[in-house]
Image (cartoon, rainbow, N blue to C red):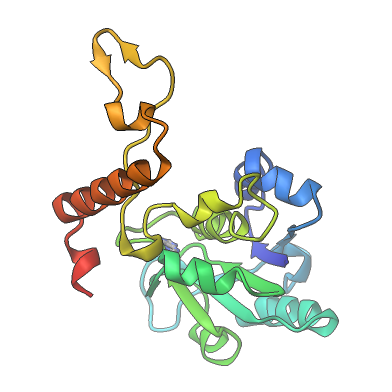
Length: 225
Ligand code: ADE
């Protein structure tokens, strides 16, 4: 999968996408991420990409022209499955969205800043608007990093143990059960007997029960849908 990201602060994306599993995904050639600085499509030699909003009011708006040029240029070389705009008023990004987007070949993500991007770009270029939650970040970069991570780890071969993505919280509308590792007794706090029993069927049943119980206690809404 290839993901192109348009940003005015590309540095914000380097660290979250340059380590651990996202780094491995890229090293293995399973995921390509290209971050493009919007200023290369600026309207003048001062690197201008934003302007005052019509109608007055505080805060700058990202201009049509740099974004349109950026999207046109990138789209000339490949067809994007989605042109995504990160915005708090977008559709809530959930595991199901990540599952669906992980089947894409090419994604283009636009990170907004200031008051956001000119509505005409949203109307004429953007095909999907995503929010990572009901709070406002200073820009779309951290939100973009969140969705690239959630999508990238689902690409087959990215996780070492492929089944581990299937047992994540939210797959099957269930939270993940508790997990334990050595030692079996730490300060008198014991690992549940059943996990030491070697009876895989019983372990599976126990995990399912725990997942159900945790979901009922913490996120009953997941089971109501
Ligand atoms: N940009 C600013 N806040 C955001 C949010 N909550 N989700 C996605 N993009 C954003």
